[in-house]
Amino acid sequence: MRLLHTMLRVGNLQESIKFYTQVLGMKLLRQKDYPQGKFTLAFLGYGNEEENTVLELTYNWEVENYDLGTGYGHIAIEVDDVYQAATAVKNNGGKIIREAGKMNAGTTVIAFAEDPDGYQVEFIGADHVRK
Image (cartoon, rainbow, N blue to C red; front, top):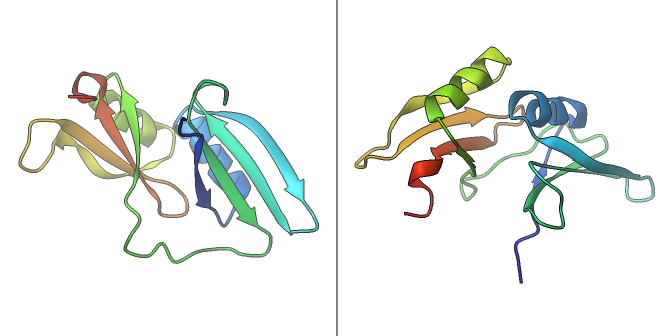
């Protein structure tokens, strides 16, 4: 078994694809419209779906926003340098909601960005992942 993807519902598919590709550096792997169901799926990631877990963006036609609720947390992305990743997000027009720095009650350096729909994306340094 393996984890295939995480799905997020988005209100503006093109704006979300732009964020994940141009701000976070993912690649659009595939996209398909489902006219009978009135939705579009887009799959993005840092590598192919056969070997990597990817992100599925679901756009339900004519739905512009969602209540994120209180149960959802965030997506985490491993980066070489958290400070550089946060700076790159800002330089590419993205929004940093927690500047890079040590986490509360720990030594791991993290930062948080926010996508166009309000979903949070955490950056964690590669040296702290799997410790």
